[in-house]
Image (cartoon, rainbow, N blue to C red; front, side, top):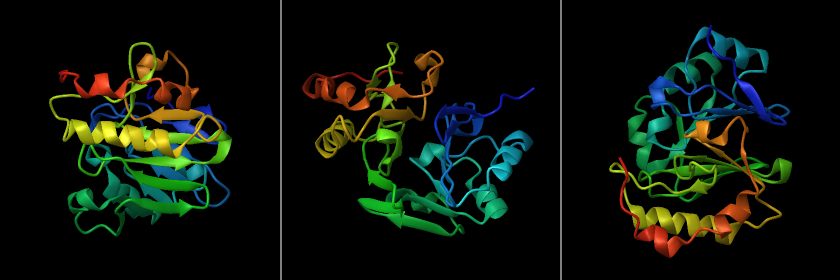
Length: 218
């Protein structure tokens, strides 16, 4: 039996890792009348029913090219708006796509932020409720200790830009405005926790100069 989405924070649900997105974790933010899907979950009967029972999807936000999955089918099913950073919009031909360069407000509480590095159009989604939640896609992933870090791989588009994007987030937020990170991968390292807490403190403690010199991992 397929695993069901689970609540990770109040009004936020995480879907099981998805083969279509190379094991990525997608999330659903349930708002009053505007549900936001962050990246694409597996497009199976269980997840379709789950989304329908919670009022469907108003926005599908894609954090990077690896999160596209079944975006076309999701838009067709729910008539939702799809947003992706402008440099990766070409990967969604014939879809009705809302692009952005630096930032885009999806709702009064949600803001897309371009965080280039993992891929050219890598972006995070910030949700100001619950003390501040950052949906980080592959930009920040938990390490074996559950600490959020940028991870350099053989497929990383531009490592120095990714480090600068982490600095951008550190400059933008504070301990009062960023309490949680919901990563788009490596969620097994969270050991059952739904999200990374004390998010800003973790980011502030990263040695970005040392990370800049890090070698790629497979």
